[in-house]
Length: 623
Image (cartoon, rainbow, N blue to C red; front, side, top):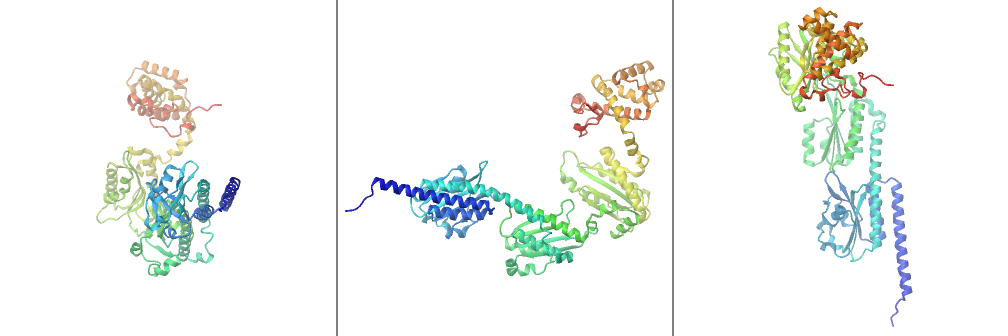
């Protein structure tokens, strides 16, 4: 007779199995937690997770699909040993596609106990030979905040292979993986920062013997840090003539062994390199060396796509490469010729720079020009402005040198006489009247010799500053137009405190004019301009003396002091003129002029806010 177990024995066996499952579960979770504390990278952690969970659940296979933000796909990145492991990085699913994609989309675990290929959500990949699997579990890997990081899945060759305990274990592993992936991402960012920070420090001492040797070693390190097959480094060594550069290549050993023809000549031009690399279908990542004034570029190539983290790392390394190159070349040699001329210390330095440019003209007019996009236009017009400027200033038989970019130019124009300079000024003025671009131009005097160009450059710079200050109302300013004003900024600063106090007092006049349609600001200016003479002021305003006296009395009521009582007539007269100009500017706003006022109610600032409302010097201090 056959034997059968008693109910008690069945219960004991069930408890034994449950205890064994709990022990496997605890051991698996404990080991994964320990791995996370070691700071494993994302793929290493996921690989160990699938191995441990497959062993604990007796699954034939376990896979991890990770979410690719750029491609917006779930990508098979990790698998246990077997046929499917050959297809890592090639199997991709959209959210909702296949059982795996459905789990990610719905953020729910999925148990398919019988023949997953018959599930209506199933998507076949013949290369994975999924017909050998008869049951599966898929659980989403979801970070805090409900961001889907991927899917963890288990497969078995028999039906009903996974119990509720297995699904629960897979779910907990998915949660641990989510925390581990977030931690790994943070760790990766820290490693990127550390790698970039130590880039120059890790270069061997012998690398600094020459620029070419240093660039070659830096290219090798850059290729290694980016896990790239090839790194190309280009550095300009002479910004004065726009010529002179060093181009080096560095390749991984495996790539160099197969494609030695590409890396054999380390100084080949970019066009040749592009032709040789194109058939290999490599991903390419390129960044400039230096942000404000790039001195070259670094380009890396590899079969795998570059991630945003790779781009951040290359930008950080690029900054280190630029610093290293500059330390060998010298930062001064790489400064744009425009900046070097405008900041030259003396006439001799200016002369040497001009000779370096090949400029030997005796009669030279320097022009400093700044261009900005007009309202309602974009940067494209400014980008095209250089060619427009060259075309406008071209003169047959005479040389014109244009230095600079990004809207800041220095023009050296050959002008044999005053008439030629006048023609140059008129052409610049016509250029300023064209739509799309606004310009502020300063024109120096004609320099009869190279050493005199130094003084003319200073003049052009001063005139351009006045042009920028005056805005579109000036456009082109010649030095002789403002030479008598060269001390005005200092004088204005000297009288700033007294002027501020008077302006604060007279602001009430502007407010009254705007609200009542009167012209007290004009009356006040005329009164001060005529040194407080009622007779001369009334004649200038074409009003009766009594009318003027009535207005003066009204002004006294508004400001709390008689205009006749001001001690500093110069400051008072200048303040009155500013008040009158402010009143005209505000009145131009029409019926809505109230909205044009300063948010602090300081009428003398004018129609546009000064941009410093929170720290307005016109507001009386409290406390």
